[in-house]
Figure 1 (cartoon, one colour):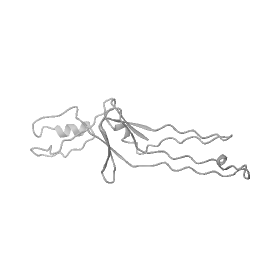
Figure 2 (cartoon, helix red, strand yellow; figure 1 turned 135 degrees about the vertical axis):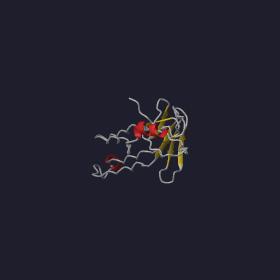
Figure 3 (cartoon, one colour; figure 1 turned 45 degrees about the horizontal axis):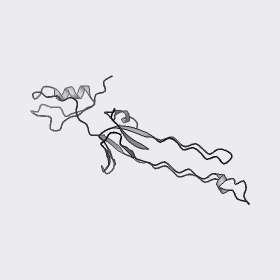
Length: 160
């Protein structure tokens, strides 16, 4: 599985509801000592500026900050040896084969270093946070305070 940056993407909203991404299995070996085919690589396209972190320790694994950058996240498993590998002069038709290795699995968290396209500026208590909460998925702390924006509230709005 590879993570590859794509300059045409600007959000990670495609992966918001996809919790498990899995590559295809390779093909099984055929008759007449044929070897099985490898599966194609799973390439996950992410926007430039994506941070890949360990969800348990919050440790940064990689910063995908350049266009066209490709990072190998996980390796697939090695296929096993078929019964043709165990043939000998005394055992001409073995009835067993070796299992392959398991693929590597990882749990990661994707974060995007987001640069805002739109900024809302106004007088205190004008409804800026309420507007942001109604049109995006952000739930800022709204109250009757002189200055409620202690931390900037960022939201992503999917239009059409």
